[in-house]
Image (cartoon, rainbow, N blue to C red; front, side, top):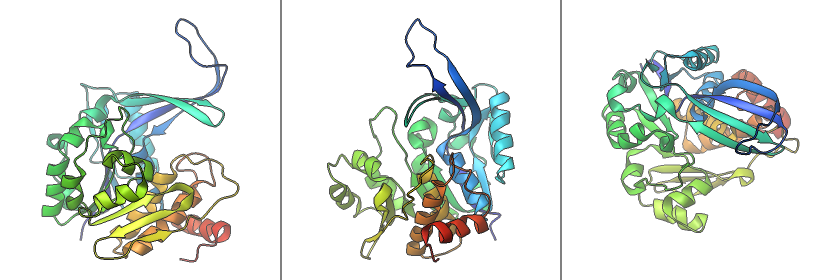
Length: 315
């Protein structure tokens, strides 16, 4: 028996969110923001927190500094029910931070990567690969060390019978340097959204991108926003699962990460991929009923109740 259902391996930072800003920043001038929130950030942290809320035993492997932001990250994960024994804390680099400047329905982000950019395979406790049923890797373009060692990390997972998933997330420098022909055969499931997949494969259309990864992917689930998700499995027909649409969206922050949390929670429990996809669509929809990426995820029972009552989910 493995100790953890899921170990999340990815970026960790704090978010400093500024709202009610008087105007756009200008060099040499000062502006006021009338509201500020300091909170746990990162897509992978949202994924881990929500998977834990859904009842999975989750641990996190990431690098933070020995500083007050690192304290906030560690405490916040623990409060969400995520085991933090594999966090790497050190003095050389500060904990990463993102300044989020919100303007009505849009926002501008500025990120200092800090410690997360330096974590590599040599920093990771080997027990990560022996205590998990599943390892979810995310945001590799934010983590040059993890990206460099990705194939070695995936090989260790295979050697230890650990299933794997990868959500690359956005590439901030927009170079999209990832050899998907090499990486995809090593993964249990690949989890991009449709925009990311087109950039990764240098494709103009989603259909073109799908055909490029088809020979290499064991399975892939592609998040298509309000259209739902598309599941590809080797040797089986593609399956499009329609989205459960919310006509009163609070916000969509973390919806893709919440989809991942539902999908991988079911995968780690041994469920068929189509059932994982249906559950992921539901958890992604529930995410949009509350502000922020984790607010809607208080317990599995509550999430599933909202899924039934608001969206007619019948899983």
